[in-house]
Length: 412
Ligand SMILES: Cc1ncc(COP(=O)(O)O)c(C=O)c1O
Ligand SMILES: Nc1c(O)cccc1C(=O)C[C@H](N)C(=O)O
Image (cartoon, rainbow, N blue to C red; front, side, top):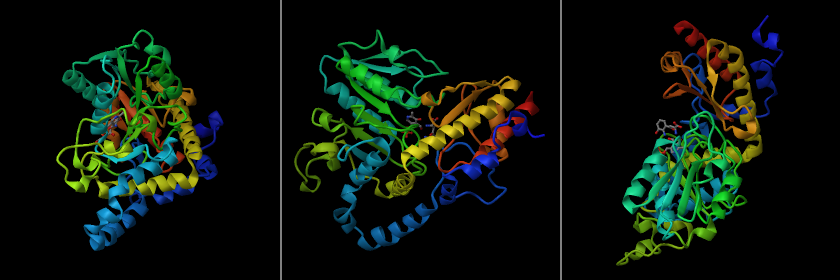
């Protein structure tokens, strides 16, 4: 009798057969059989789409190769906001004119957080949680030093994330901006963005959401939630490829009050006027700095269109089912070996990855990578199982969690 029969849950094969999105996996490159058995790290680097190879080739040959410098006037100048608008429409719940693509997440965070601090004289405190991703914390440390601001820390809660009540006693008339990750990179905890944004606004401060682990995996409604600012990366669930550029969302009603600190010609109001001094462009373009990474933003378009073709609701539905399945397997195969499930059990509070903890997981991860089972490891003991909804099968999850069990059992 198999384990699945004992617990009477459907097998991974049955789940894959019933999955309305199963066919979408064909859109992605998967290596030859035998090379890679289970990819569970799409939350660090998404798989490439087959369409991307063809589209990059045609971009090089046709757009770049034949239009040459004319490409800037003909289409590339508007590429950051054109791609941004489409990301906004398909995945962020953002009306046009509020999203631009470029820089890295870290640089975008710097630009928007500095702008938020500079825009509010008398408000010299930045709030962030101790367990936020290092780059978010480091950027804020730098800005605080640069601007003489102070940081108010929300205590770490590695097995969960930031809840609305955690802001009690921290928010006040000196708060300039609150910076939180919508989906926590460790636990996968999904914050209540609407409620937290409302609470931050009640204190007169601005709210910035880091959407790195959210975009393309959970439902976002930035305009409806009245979010001020958001930044996210595109190489995870938007499958833009290693080092693909970030996106920034700046709510239309806050754009005029904000001036970002890296004044480059491409964010100025008349880039080819070669003017004497900087005057920011109108609207979202003022958040651009230098020449946009047009080549590097091409793959994002393919994934955004794939998501648009199935709809974010069905992407989220599959994500929830995958994480539920991974938790059920972890309960059955890993918990008896002393593993703790760190991620929320309530799907409404969970993004698209789950984290399991065990003191031996650094060694386990190394062994798994040798076998082509690829989760990732975050110190001190967290093994993350990332489930990119459109490219991950239930069979891959079962194979992966079983391999984790086997590798751990060998080491115990
Ligand atoms: C929450 C969060 N913020 C930021 C980053 C990355 O920033 P960057 O793209 O600048 O490396 C990551 C992942 O790398 C992340 O998980
Ligand atoms: N951004 C990464 C990179 O440049 C190299 C390797 C991994 C990453 C990651 O995505 C880390 C990831 N944001 C995390 O949540 O840990």
